[in-house]
Length: 341
Image (tube, rainbow, N blue to C red; front, side):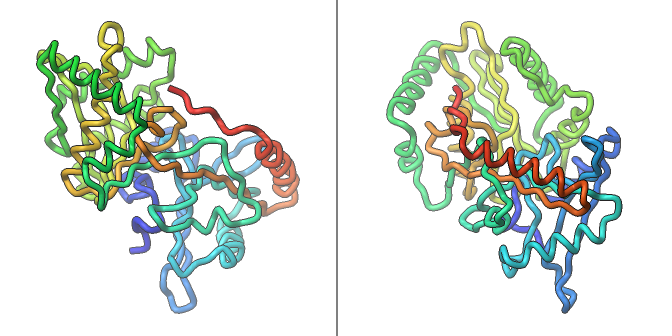
């Protein structure tokens, strides 16, 4: 099996990608394409999970869809940056009717393993980052000490204040233990919080709702959904949904009550309790995924640089590539995105 923690993100596990491809086919927005590259001895050395679509009058292969928070071609450790141009050229030659191959949101590493894709001369650093918290080999005291001091103090005071005024209970359900009632309550809370914050809610997006419902109901032990909940006096005021891939937990969809509960920061309290739960369960990492929200840095997460890379196959594709290189040069001169709250 070529896919592992050393060369793929949790979003590239078989179950998650199957859900994505099934939904792409249903949406008819892109055509799933998977290319497997073998060495001369028949050994698999690269896997390219892709989608084919048409944009700007050109035929594209790309590696990302909206629900895939970060992604990359999956490469055997024997593959280095010098090998990649030949591999990509072979993939492009094998897939007909393609002008360009676009790799977006490439993480600069998988755990401690560098991603050779970002070493290519045509790879550009995105202004957005991903964030992960290493759990393996660290004590609870280590995790707490890694948090920014003011953040740590404020979160502790808010947690104590809530517990003093109310009966505070945190629970985490995984896989088949997630109830239909909690799924319905979580989705309702997502709708309310998205409306109050004037943000889009991908869980209810017509194109992608079925994917998230499918993930929530998955029974695959290698891609197990989990749902954590913070209750006060028997009422849920925060949910956090994610999935685990072996010993990696990924948080992807938070929801919390606003109004009078906002002062307690229930979402941050639930993040903290959920992190400690997976630490106690022996997980290696807790991934907070893409997005430069300030709380991710304050939790002591490590920043993962994200890159993109474009490869041209045809003359018209090469013309577009030159324009893209100009955009990358301009982007490199811009300031990074300031972390938001």
